[in-house]
Length: 410
Image (cartoon, rainbow, N blue to C red):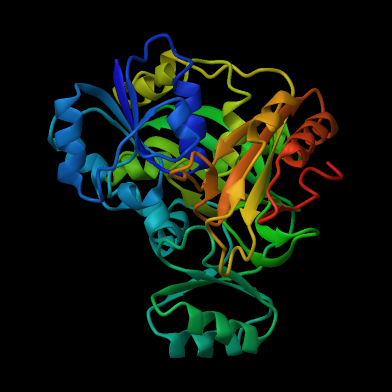
């Protein structure tokens, strides 16, 4: 069957790479794709409108559209495709509010008694500043809407909180500060049934030792070292299952992949936030460990037959190290040439392209902030980490950098 993947990052490269391994996949397109995705799928530019996607899907007999980024999901692309009679993997716009509005998710948690940090939502910066002035510090200031994984500031002073509010002109959520290791738990949901897809630990800050500003993610380890079987079971029972049930009761059943960002506090898992799509770079770390046919899992999710299908995983651990352009996340410098990517593959690593383009002379160049996601597996975190960094070190890219501590100490 013919498939179309929407997106241009490392997540979409990993999805295309895994889907290409399915014997059931015929032609595979990605819109718009990138220089790496072009090796496993046909890249096509469709613009941002729903109508162009629908027209392309009809013209090319697309059996399933897989939507990678959060923007089109929150914007209702799945609704438009389904209304046109086209199969699509992902939640409706109403269900995508779990990511599109932190205030919506917090209110749902309050109604369903889901453990999460105490919070308050504000439309006005002045009201938020007054709240912070009388609240114990630190606090977590979050943009209520989409912010590409970077709309979060941990404020240790009123001045820091005020500066964060100045940078977030829209509605905000202010949360109590939680402590503990973080973990990302991914599940597939068909509206009723839940299948655990795996876990990962993401490294958000740009610098070694978790220093510097937040980013979209500088690396990941899968499975998440701190998420024990007992904690995962609690997260499913206390957080994920009540959420899925609450969404169904509201008449907006969740269909797609649900990504629960968790804080593993001394009293148990608490929800930090939900995302309604695969994480990036977590997806890259998950896909190299997945032994199942990804297409089978996506179709079962769309068709409401997850109870008959469960993911199968390869033994071991994976580590993903992101290589970013100089200046990221503030002002990444694009256009620099990247050489010896194939040499990284020769070390045993898999290189997923996150922000690349191909120049007229054939050279691969950086076209974004996060540019490559070098991923490797091993029997232990240490083995996978060593293999991933061997891949990083084989690449010749003076215009890029990577954290050197992904997976260290795990």
